[in-house]
Length: 45
Ligand SMILES: [Zn+2]
Image (cartoon, rainbow, N blue to C red; front, side):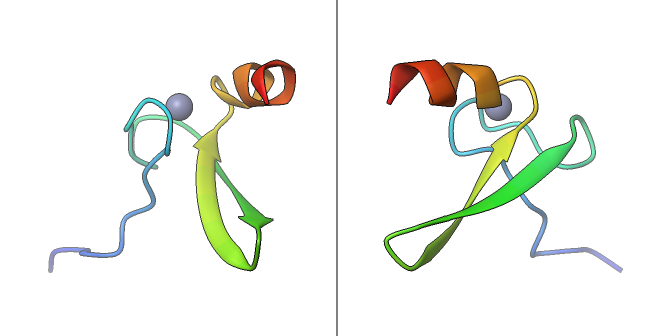
């Protein structure tokens, strides 16, 4: 049993097994960001 659909942070590349991953949508696409990169995303973009 291997999960090929594991969520991975767009910014740091960590997976949902390592960090909490949040899903967000941008221009109709589903994206993932972990809780550690979320502040970076908020302030950086
Ligand atoms: Zn991250």
